Image 1 (cartoon, rainbow, N blue to C red):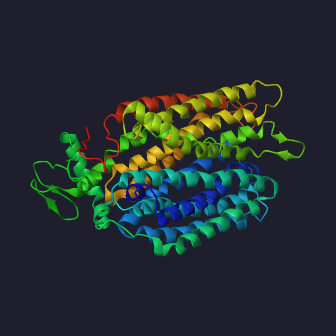
Image 2: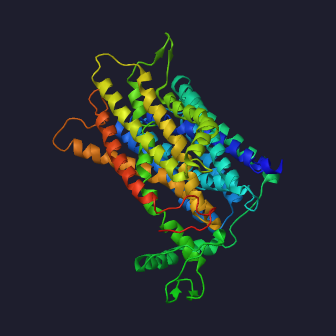
Image 3: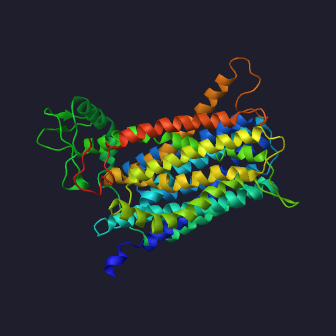
Length: 513
């Protein structure tokens, strides 16, 4: 029995997975149909609404970097979750209150975006702290910690996808048919339940925090300078042995920091090591950005595509365009058990490896499926443009399904990769690095939209690729552009990935080439 128990999650982990699932229901209830709200109620253009949604989503995923900094430096994860959840809840309540009033663009834009950015501010502390706090509930000293940690991230993502599935399938229908006030009130109620459940679980939690977290981040900038100097001067090796106290070989001369300590050659500087852990991840982090851009499409242009298609089921019911996003979550929920129970055992036999495939291989497979999704999306949009009569919305299902398959491989892989690549005192920052991929990807998506709009209207063209009249838009060209850029990112990833060792912190004899 003892040999099997190490692969089970304790009660606190299960509770946190449930809390994360309910929170995703609330968030997706707002985010999934936001582009429709901005175009139909606030009267923004398709391009402007897509940029605003991408920018908001980008900030929402970038703020966890600040949240992780403050959490690891000055607070603890539990307190950060409690505090940030109240900001989050306040933003949802404010948004639901604003939905009661008639909207015009000039009047409603400021308070609406004020509410949305209050949600973002809350999520900045909530998201990285909750996931890292959940992983903290596992005992690193027990045998099978690595397996339990992997199990936690898999089922955490499964719970997140379950909540997202309910959010994108139920709430868009309520918003389109019963009104935005109820459609935004339900996420606020769900988040209130989420906060209460988390607080009620307090007696179950293990509280763990880096003992010198403040020193770690207080010295990060000066340590980065030291590491950069070391990186330029020669090769850096991470010592083997005690992998949870990884140390960095120093240059022959002492390194002085701005906070007043000197490290001589006979002493190892753990702070510089931690800075190096972040610094060395930036190249591979950059290769994930195009995947994040692709993930912006379902909540923006995929949804607007669906609004022009035949959506009737019977005489009275119409499929909300945003509801097709549930296909992604449904695919993830269906495929993740198949991945663990069927695919991985087969791959273990083929590869003669205990994990079947490592994290980086999993990410690469996810990239391939995301590129395929964009190619299919371009072909489907081309068919829509050249069809005399509206085509059925089911034509969009293949691109959603492929994105779901891509998520199964890639999103969990990225999360586990970053969490494993940083040492114990930086676990919240590891989660924040994972979330920041999607934040910067949101901004990159907005920048791409602006550049494409500018370039496609330079020669006096009457409309851009994102024309409000989608029969004149060229979303097929845009999807093709995303596919090409993603192929370039994948080629770069394949070349960079060889310089990283999978599961660095939990595996001995790690070397950064």
